[in-house]
Length: 260
Ligand code: KIV
Image (cartoon, rainbow, N blue to C red; front, side, top):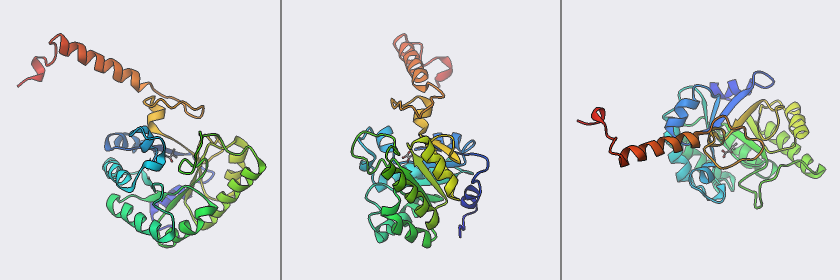
């Protein structure tokens, strides 16, 4: 039974109006996203996007908690989900201890863990302790050693991902992120389980979509085909900084209005 009303509302959106989700790492961005999103995720993508790390595996508990605290200050209506970092949920006890720490310090609504069958007992354990969990299947950045490639090419891989989805659904997750899987596989999964699916590179057949906000804004250099750039913020920042530089050099800044 899902106690949190906002989480229940997300669960009920299966096959209804699409669920809008984006990532946030700070209060400023969260304040904007909160007006338009159903779910705001503090993703461990922040390691690569903000900190320039090689992979999400380098993100630790303190980093995600600090960013989540900032994001929480900008959220009033959306469901706030936090990623559990790599190696913070290797067994049930460890997962529960760290999950409690994240929830206590950030007041978030739910946690996201990567994986299906391999971590199913841990996920069941957290849900039994009344911790709302969002699943994540398909491409799993915390487990990926090679370059990111879409999943669902072989029948063995497809079977495994479908099995993961069914196990997570039966365990009681309230939504499942499906990352980078072939279109027909995303469609089969979305049609076979009662849990809303949130796609990233997983076709329009999912019940909702998520992107990394920096990618959507054109702030990152990441350009896989599943991203649609809605803006070129980098260009705007470049122009503004160049104008500031010129004004400083030409002694046009500060102006009369900027002094005391
Ligand atoms: O870490 C993240 O931002 C994510 C999304 C890409 C789904 O897991």
